[in-house]
Image (cartoon, rainbow, N blue to C red; front, side, top):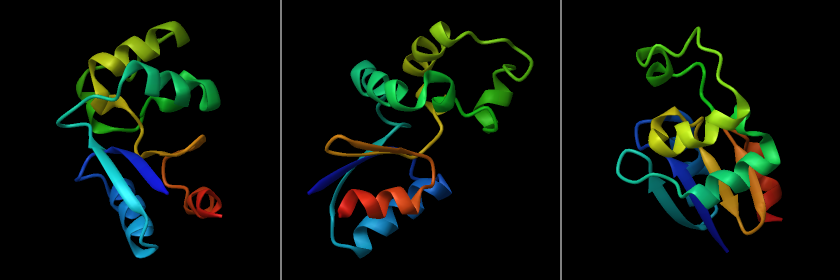
Length: 114
């Protein structure tokens, strides 16, 4: 089994996900959003399950720095915005086969392993 994690190395929740899977000796592929953006297809896959709005990190520093706090962002604009600026994504995005999780979700990660 291999798990793909989208996040940044400095993100606490991404570090938790990495530690969780490393402790269970699961092969991990980290996509560091500081270095490379998630593909449009990957973002669509997560948006289909959780909704595009859920992928947007409205509490993050990057969101505030861009002045988006008071902006009304339609569902149709979210995915193109996340493709252009991947640091606006709520992390970590974890994918194991067809199973997906968003944010810190140890219960869902454990379910991925069973």
